Length: 186
Image (cartoon, rainbow, N blue to C red; front, top):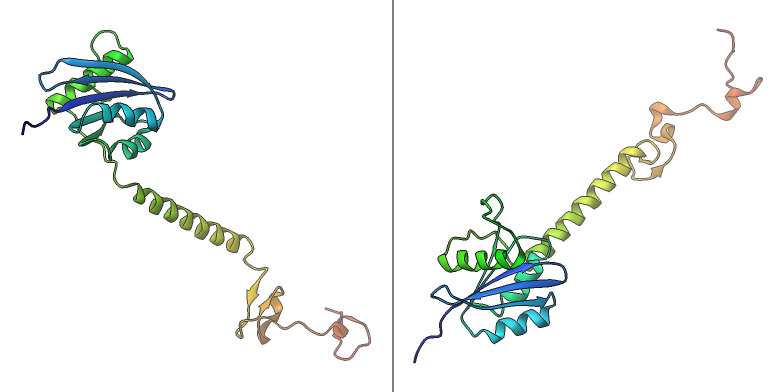
């Protein structure tokens, strides 16, 4: 049984459309297309190319989503970062896609990590937990003296009710003639 040839697909990703360039194993461009940036359209294109498809596209705002959509339908998916490479001649979406497909065919692309999307969920949960702890700490520090607990665990809003060392004299002490009044001379 003859093994199917590998198709090298490069995508130049934009918000509304993808510019696609497909090369065969010999380096000839076999197809160029513009496809809507929708999962159904992208998957339809990739399925139409056969079972041995290698895909690449540049890192960007939609890279994680596109990686998750394509990993189930392609043999190999590479998200790359080509910044810092010297640009040659005029730059257009078609030229970018053609250049990427050739670099993919030659194995000259370095992948940027795009792992399991489950890690993103974990990252978001950890980020939320850290924010909650920081906000709780900030609130406690801001309102530090207004709500304290005594030795028995009771909450009190008055700092003098924390123990015997800070007891306040009775209200009668401030009145003239009351028992336990102090002299105001001093």
